[in-house]
Image (cartoon, rainbow, N blue to C red):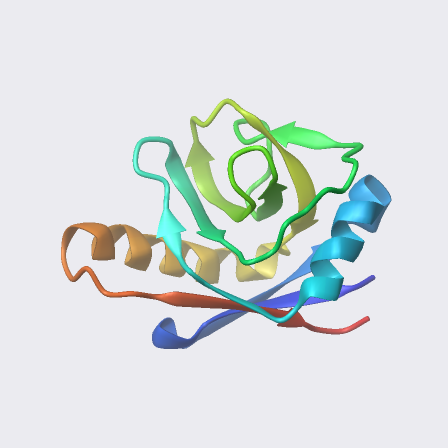
Length: 141
């Protein structure tokens, strides 16, 4: 299974996620081949514990499986072609009731790190207004 490493340099935090080739092989291949990617980390404002980043990659992959954010497990990584080519990570409860193509899943052992990142980005929106980067790069194959 291919793994992608996500790093937030300013927060000194990294997690990995497994690409779900079994669900969306073409999308996973496009994403893998585009790595490394660097983006600004954003946070959903009205939908709950969900972070996203606009990446400099266009995907035209046929998607076999999309999942509602409300039904996705914590750690779900999605890639939204329909709302602007962005990587989305759910780190807790979320009321966003649209579906996004499944890209991967962050293992449970990293959920605390995701929560730390999510809360830092959320608080940054209202306090510091700094730019926090997220770096996506190839991990193990």
